Length: 359
Image 1 (cartoon, one colour):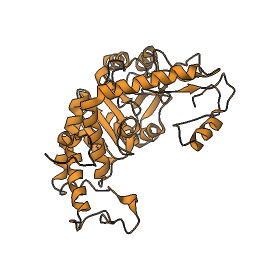
Image 2 (cartoon, one colour):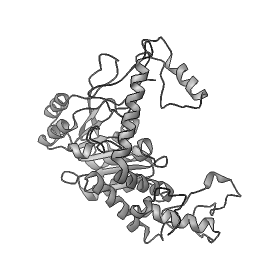
Image 3 (tube, rainbow, N blue to C red):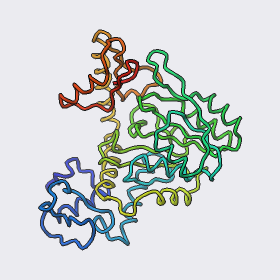
Image 4 (cartoon, rainbow, N blue to C red):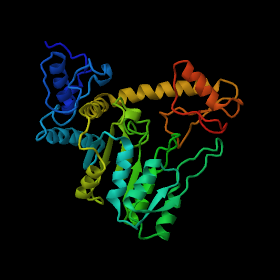
């Protein structure tokens, strides 16, 4: 019986070809059996700049030879496409930023209009500039209790499409940064009835759709493309992201050109292997792990509401896996609470000084 590799304690490599290749490379490096004549320049040595380079290995020249590694990558990406029910998938080592910009380049020609949410991530602003697209802004509804942006209403998108019949697509962010969710199936119908694809920046939603108590992910809801960060809500290396698409309304060749034009030609094999491993974990244990997440968040919300003045974002239209704490009723300054949490060794995603915003 073989001894489990401590770098793969859950045995995911059997279903993760990029992870398996990375593990094989690391075993050679640990055994001192490597004399790499390829990049990176540290040559797997930690006596130069220290342990900061531990685990670093390129896709090309480490996980496989340059002329073969794309087949390994394509195998891993095909497994991810199958898991999410997509026709096409690419792994990015430049985060959802890269995926958003690739989608902008893939959907339209310079000068065309695109229906896009006003609460977009800044990567999409640059994507619009890169692609030469003209934004037609659609604004989200506002949650009356917290003052936070909720989802964009389907009718708002329908009205924008009717007023701009030449729009090349619809781009929405769902869930939002604060975890509000909308009717993606309704948005998909509205876009498709107008002959336009729906692109969803789902950077914060890589786990959605993998438990019955979670909303469906964007592809399952009918979107034509979804960008999601494996490093945000799955256990992948920082910068790891996936771009998934259905190709009925999007051209595969153009998707590939847009993706490659904005991606590095030297992708980090360690990041790509971690995306592959996170996908394998989600496929095997996703429902169980998401269930544990949901129970933990529900318990945290209950306890926080017992604190006088504290509330949480909750209810229909809110991602049940995200915890947003509202301090307006306490008079506390979100930025100061954040500083206290950081000092206690518990850094949070974001804290604001506006009482009605999340901390």
